[in-house]
Amino acid sequence: MRRGFHGSLGTSVSFSLRMGQTIFSSASLLFMSLGVEFYSYTAFCYLVTAMGLLVPWSLTLSLVDGYSVLVAGPVRQRGILVAVVIGDWILSMLALAAACATSSVIDLLHQFDGSYCPPKLCNRYQLSAVMAFLSWLLTTASTLLNLWLLPSL
Amino acid sequence: MRRGFHGSLGTSVSFSLRMGQTIFSSASLLFMSLGVEFYSYTAFCYLVTAMGLLVPWSLTLSLVDGYSVLVAGPVRQRGILVAVVIGDWILSMLALAAACATSSVIDLLHQFDGSYCPPKLCNRYQLSAVMAFLSWLLTTASTLLNLWLLPSL
Image (cartoon, rainbow over all chains, first blue to last red; front, side, top):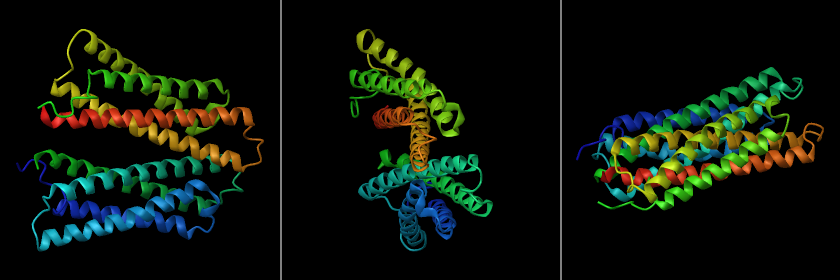
């Protein structure tokens, strides 16, 4: 019953995925928060909220993974895995929605003259959206890898 | 091994889910296409593309479901179910992304004076986004119900 062993909770692959999520979502949060005007657009506030939820979640799970790799073995309790899969799945949808909303707003701001979107700010917003997309990709990978293990428990 | 039987491909629950998807995604497509200016915003074009993919997919699968309910039994081939789950999953993500992008653009158009968004057109766009959200919900439900059956095959 070792099917789907690699990448599930408590392995080193999972640890690197979680670290990537933490880094990308923190970067997205910082790029957006350092721009001063983010609270004037709903989509940007939503991105900040979603990333603000994703950062502590990924950080906690990367700590759990690190502890599992170094001290305890991989996590095999069904209840914990179900909770992690559901949390990952909800957060990945939030991240995807936030990334799409942000990029469509940036695209629209580009269409208007440029008075709404000075190049310096706009580049920062774009970087933030790209980071959000990357953190969505990694979160989805984590969800799928954990989900794959679930039926064999 | 009848776990997750209800709602999987070839049952009447699945048929009603597919019918709902077809109706909502067609409604979303029509509300957006009847507004004349949809091609001037990238997000609206994306919504039309995503819904244009979702309509034939849902329609085909609702026909398969109808045939299975009336003539043949429920579908139990592992390969077909895997293909349906993957297709559903990709289309549901496209629908979510399109719905979020559209609603954030509508929200932004509301903020600008109103010259960009006459109330009659804007209400139509909003209805289209709501329909896209509903079709996303139903597609996700189909994905989960089919996925649930997969390990027992």
